[in-house]
Image (cartoon, rainbow, N blue to C red; front, side, top):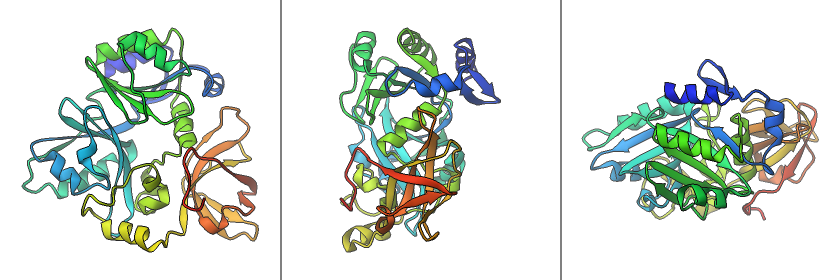
Length: 342
């Protein structure tokens, strides 16, 4: 995080534990605001890798699960990077800004992913760098967000993953039940937009963004879930995170076999847990007989504060059965897209 941006957030009431932003003084109140209320959320905790050079596009095309040629200054993309055995190292959101590709991912896997990608650069004219501090990065969600962004910038992205470039700011529309946007930009422009939007929006901790991602069924691979799941088990094929016609990439044979032979026995579900303690990544979900039928991927306390909402990878055959986690009831919730078994 840029020191100047951290100082700005502290002036807005942010409380930190080292470099980690915790909340803006009242985490209980902040948690209850979304999705009905407008929120601003710093996203500096997310990692970002930049890819530059004449061969950047060709290099990424050979490594990632989606067709990088579909990423433009007006369109972002979801993607993943897998091992040769088809297990996802990470999930990405990829955007293009001023001719540079930016790949956002969980910060705790950035170093490992960057190291592995660099192994395959060889003679390619591409530079891969940790760009987490190169741009200010924050989120904005607001039922009136379209009108307020248009008033502030003159435009706004209309559909999920549409991108608008406004001066030194890049705005990406995110899937959500209300208009939701990620903003990347230079320090002064980011501060000005934050200040303008904060007239109608409350600053909140990162848990609000986690809630929106879970509600939208957007998986995030962290260090605890690296190399565990094939991309289809994370529903990436259902949210346009895999292109089966783009050609080879690491793990492509396993990913393609799962699609064309139809042998996927697990997929990701959105669930509610009758508990107020967030489970660890990989925590076991059991059926009525006590057999493990799934594990937790991402979780957060719900805005109501009376249950945990999570994304979990479950056996498809067990999803309609009574489920529990540490003795607490687990209920399957709806997602904004159809699952394979529906």
